[in-house]
Length: 331
Image: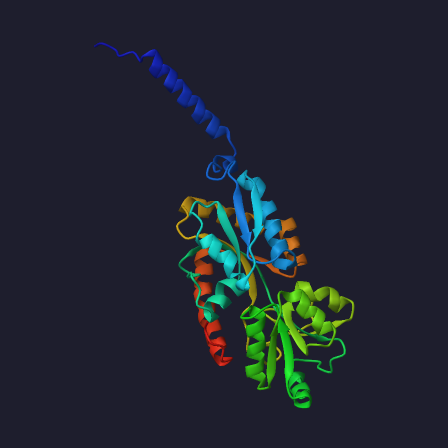
């Protein structure tokens, strides 16, 4: 029988393939998984202005993803319209996995519940993971006679109407204040600000009876004695203020909290989404990342995509109910 002999070209090709397979097998698993992102610039959109807890966590996330993805992650702040401008810019981006957005409860579940948006937060975005959870604080001026949430009733009976501030119209803080108004049955007037900082400033000056803001913005002024916290608007007590009760513990039924997650445009290849989810899961176990999240007033956790999708659908319906109770019209 005549034996076939491989041509020099075939031998050369075979040797090349064997060398490539050997090199691939010798690579660490993390490096073998990199081609989708290696050397490609990723843009992370943060739908808030620079400064504040969301921006700080987003920037830390970008830095933390740079090494494992073997790429450069740049940050772009796209604030405005309660964060929806930044979200919309990502929805319109190519579904190539190179444009991502930091999603928070205010933009992903509150805004869709109270505004007619040009996008569907559930259908037009693909969740990667939620990695931080927290709550807002009900903060009063240090001189306020209110020692707990229900004392606001007494204060309202003396003043006729209370003024409360939040970081903007139709935000998590705004609707939380409206819920308080409905549950306590007292007249309140909402004053929207462009972010938490000016609301905190006016609360310290006594121009507001209370402010509903993130703990990160309030904490320095609580420590300096210029503000006091009556309650935590979230599912759990805050790690920075463990002695302060939640609204539910104070007698006001409220279990929703703020959260921070990572999202991509719908249609991004599944292998890229899986890679991002895996990296977020890994980050959520690292001491440095967890410490940074806690420093900024949140509790680190890992919530996978399927759970995020379910949570979003539930929250949007719940915020719609709260908006209806507060007589807020969808615009």
